[in-house]
Every structure is written in C-alpha cells, then in structure tokens.
Length: 159
Image (cartoon, rainbow, N blue to C red):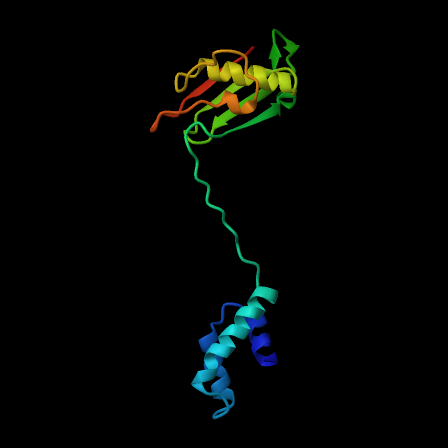
C-alpha cells in the first residue's frame, strides 16, 4: 500500500483501476481481479482522510420577496465637495436578491435607524414592489414580493 500512497501523493487524479493495473504489471501473478474492489475502497478511504480538498458548492435558490442584501459604504475617500465644502457621507446599497433590483440611499451614519430609514425610502420609491404602508419594524418587512420577470431597476437619491 505504501507504493500506492506514494503514487496518489504524486498524482492525486490517478484512478483505482490504473493503479491496480500498474500493481499487476509490477508484480505479475500476485493480484487477482477480485481484489480491485478492495483496492478501490482503500483508495477512497485514503482520499477522504489525506487526499486533496474538494470544492464544496451549496446551490442557492432565491424566491421572490424572500431576501435582500445591503451594505453601507463610506464615501469620504472620494473627497466629494458641494460648493467647495467637503461632503462626508455614506451610501446605503440595497439589492433584492431574486430580481437583482438595486437602490442607493445617501446616509450620514451607519446605524440601525439609518438602515431602517434607507430601507423604507428605497422600498417606497421602487415601482417594482409596493411602497411601505407604515414604519418598518424589522429588516424582513422591508422586503416585498417581486413579480416574476420584473425588470432590473436602479434608483439613487439622498435623504
């Protein structure tokens, strides 16, 4: 088995059948075809314990009105000025995951209050989903159902 491990470490893509044929060529008459499955099991165990890492992918299925992603971005480094006066601000960026509709709101703090105000302003001006009928009490309420096939829209405003 030491030779098999050395070969697998040298080339992790080697298949069990290839290694079995190489073993049979190295030592004619020692191995039987009935031993191939045993070698395959040993190689599978070795790969699970010591082999190369596998890429893990979790598929994401998004439903309309179920999720949004948001972030605050500090814009100070852009040195924006209004009438020659520096304008330090943040931008709240919201993307509805299913439809990819995005909106941007200018904010002045990265607080829960700013999050609620920006979310409410964004939801209230988008034609793609109903406006908020009252104050938003949770982030979940700020997400409205999107019609299937809704066009991508962008909205940029300030408070």
